[in-house]
Structure formats: C-alpha cells, structure tokens
Amino acid sequence: MKIVLTDAQTVVDGLVSADILKQFGEVVSYGLLSYEEVAGKIADADIVVCNKTLLDSHTLRLAKNLKYIGLFATGYNNIDVDYCRSRGIAVCNAGSYSTSAVAQHTFALILAHFNRTAEYDKYVHDGRWKRSKTFSPFVYPLNELSGRTLGIVGLGEIGKAVAKIALAFGMEVLAYSRTPKNIEGVSDVSFDELLRRSDIVSVHCPLNPESDKLFGKEAFARMKRGALFVNTARGGIMDERALYDALESDRLGGACIDVLTVEPMVEDCVLMRAKNCIMTPHIAWAPVETRQRLMGIVAENIAAFLRGERKNRVES
Image 1 (cartoon, rainbow, N blue to C red):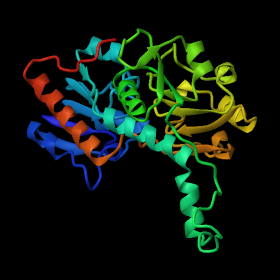
Image 2 (cartoon, one colour):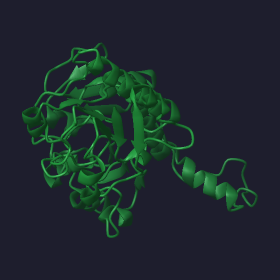
Image 3 (spheres, rainbow, N blue to C red):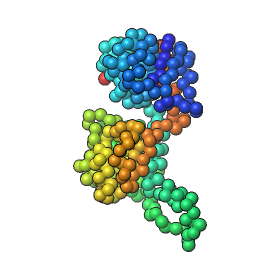
C-alpha cells in the first residue's frame, strides 16, 4: 500500500517520527503541500494521512485508489466527508490525544497572566533587580487564583481536565455546555450567567455554526469588567476585532490566546497591537509526548481499518 502524508511538518520533527506507519506499506512524506499540489501527489495513494490539508472533490478527484483518510487531528472540517462517503473512502480522526497537554497550556497561560512571570523574568535579566532597594520589588501586581471563579465554555474531555486543575487551585468552577455534565464541584449554568460571574472565561468547545464568533462585542460586553478571556480551542470562536476593542477599552483585564481565525498569523492581525494580550502560536496540543501519542492513535486507526473495524470512523 502507498501511504501519503500531505502536511507532515505539522506533526513530525526531529523528536517525533512517522516511522510507525511503515508497517502498512510505502510511506511518502511531504512537509506541506499547497492546495494546487495535493491532487497530483496523492493520485496513486491507497491511504492519505493529513492534519489540516483541504481534501475535497477537487484535491481528491485523481485519487482513484484511495480507500482511507487518516487525520492527525480531532477536528475534520477540512475533509469533505459527504464526498468521501460517495466514493467509499473511510475517514478516521484522532480524539482525546491532547487533553492533558491543552489543559496544561491553558493554565500556563492563566498563570503567566496572574503571576507576571515573563515581565519579572525580563526585570531580572535587564539588571533591574540588582539595582532594587528591596529584596522583593513590587513592580507588577500579582494575584491569587484561589477563590476566583473560572467559567468553562465546553465541558468535553479538555474542559473537564481544566475544571479538575481549577478545583485543585481552590477556584469556583462554572460550566456552560450543550448538555449539563453533573460533575462534582462544577456548577452547570447558562451562558449569560457564566459571562456575568466569571473572573476567567476559558473556551474549550468545538468550532461549528453555533459557536462561530460566539465571543463577539456583545459577549465581551456581558463579561465581568476586568475579567480574563482564554482561548485554546479555535480562533473562529472569537471576533478578533471585538476582543481588541474590549482589551483597549479596559472592559477586559487581559486575554490569553493560542489560536486565531487565520493561521499562521496574518501580517496585520489586530491582536498584535492589543494590550494585556498573551499569545502563543497554536502549540497547546504539541508537546513531544502528545504528538507521539497522536502518531500511535493514527497507526492504530489504520490497523483497525485494515482489520475491517470502524474505529474512530467519522460520520457526517
């Protein structure tokens, strides 16, 4: 069998290898194919594995031997599932591989905001501590998490992991989800109540028509003044201009962002100019162990498919 990886560099590097896939046949790995290149490169593939490559009726039109598409991701909005079904092409995603990593990064961002670690590190390395009159200079205000209220939007596996960490910090935890989860220590509330009561709002829901631009001007206006907004889910869930305005007007006390609507970041992204905004380049999911786990899930999905099983099969 011929297995083609269309955007391998989004997962593979010097620490994480795709060699596990060689057990199934010849592996041809491309770092990052453009949309125009995809059709020709996968024309004779039996299996395609991708992360964000757009696989639609145009890019798949020449792939007459294609039987299976595997995803280095949980989301599959880049795959035309209906077209694949009409062609008899199986599509399988990888779920629950990054739960711990994203929950960890969520709190790394929250702690960076409340503990001002980057600012104090710069203060020390700029030589300013050497010139301080006191052993503990109060240059940047610090605040405790204990006793604060965290509102979680989307209480799936990642949301539940974030709630568990928050409870360990002594925080009150609210959650808004399509269906109440009845988790001990977590109060299921309406979206409006969550916005009104939360000191921190952290987004962990999927991007879909219901959540698209869920956090816009109106939602930010309903949040508690001075609250922190955290998004490690999908950029499309927020209106970037509205977030910028909420930060500049001091409606919000800060934002911690790992995702944007367009990635990589566009040259004129408005959030680059926003104050009190910590940003990382969509790396919450990407620790070495997480990517190794992901590669194992992708390999097991292929093995299950070849055994005639429907493991992690996507259905539209």
